[in-house]
Image 1: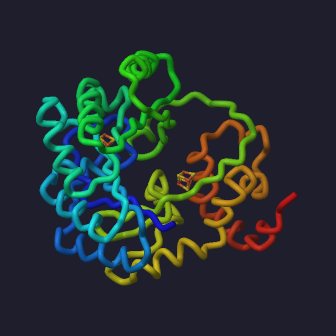
Image 2: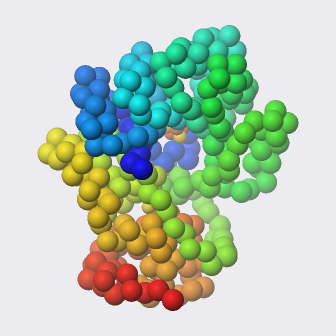
Length: 301
Ligand code: SF4
Ligand code: SF4
């Protein structure tokens, strides 16, 4: 199933300290609406069946968003919007907005929530947005970004007390969060497979991974190309036929790291995206893996 994180604009109305989408330089890029619609039509032609509107805060361009969601609906593309809920201060207005989106065919809202988001947006907004979804019949879930510290207990408690559907998500130490102090962790020795959701940036560059992958600036390992020079189908084909990406999907980052010579006791101290960066944003390691990819593919029990 072809899906994509669609970065119509990377402008945001708040500035979270952990934001993966932005480093220290605020971004304000935005696609042209007519061009974005053309891209979505081409995506439908390339069998893309799910679009997640993300990057900055999609509700900033609410009228454009309505048009884009409406178009996806006509093309039978599943739509999700990732939002910080800053627009949901007033419960009645929140209901109006969500029900308008529902009329245009929105499938799901993903409500971002963390102690960094909530530094700028009251938790009550997230509750209002969730209730608006409930009343409009729109599916939702809360994405609870956490570094697993005790500080996050009260934030989790708020979600539990209000019976909100939520999924914890580890903070990704990339973008602004790259500057965070972090303690070494010791994980179980887990596979760390990654389904890799592609990301289309406002400048029409497409990446094979939507999270930290667009920040692998030393090697640009996940950059697939740009829609100004390639078709959607070509860029998806690059992603789907790339031997190392397929190893990430099927065998996982830990096996690749072990194959590349990382010590086992070192592998268990990294979070998934950090280990991924160690492997693929290092020119020497990447060169080794590219040269040994056929051997790597046979590296099975
Ligand atoms: S994490 Fe989301 S809400 Fe926060 S600054 Fe980044 S794009 Fe905006
Ligand atoms: S593990 Fe690698 S491919 Fe997966 S989300 Fe993290 S950076 Fe992207």
